Length: 230
Image (cartoon, rainbow, N blue to C red; front, side):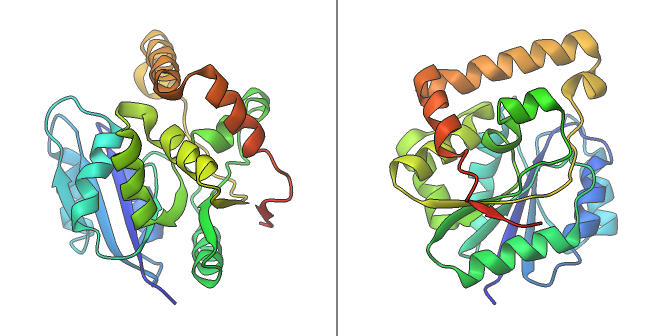
């Protein structure tokens, strides 16, 4: 089986990335883990160094976002397959990750597998936010590099840029159901700051390709047959 590099960006997440690393470090196929730390302090990186010395750490300076963090990690990625994970997800399961990686490595025609969040509220499911903007994805490094070359996503635009690339290039995308949970921003930042951040994120996402493209993605990635049973 092909080996996999896992890229995990985070910023001011305290000890949340440790729970993700606890699962990821147990998966033999993942032989490279790179964390990109955009935090204001070294607290989380320090904990990672102590508990998971095998993990590579990159410090991201300046107030840059997730897209730029992943771009920083790509040059040192030495595997052809990349697993992208958010650092604040809860309920990550080893078996689901293994299943997605196994299917991806055995089906070379697949362009991406999305770890579809099943443990989410009705509105997010209706808007397909549990698909379109999720950070948990398995894809080819070469495709991820082309996403940056063609669209140069910034901030929160990475996922929507990847979707657009897969759509316009006709790449096959599958979903693997996973009962992971991502805490809303208002639970981490406070109500008003969290809502403000969410609104800003939505405007930033839509500014890359526009509302029409979002609708196209909504329809394109809503095919019920494109599912790996969980």
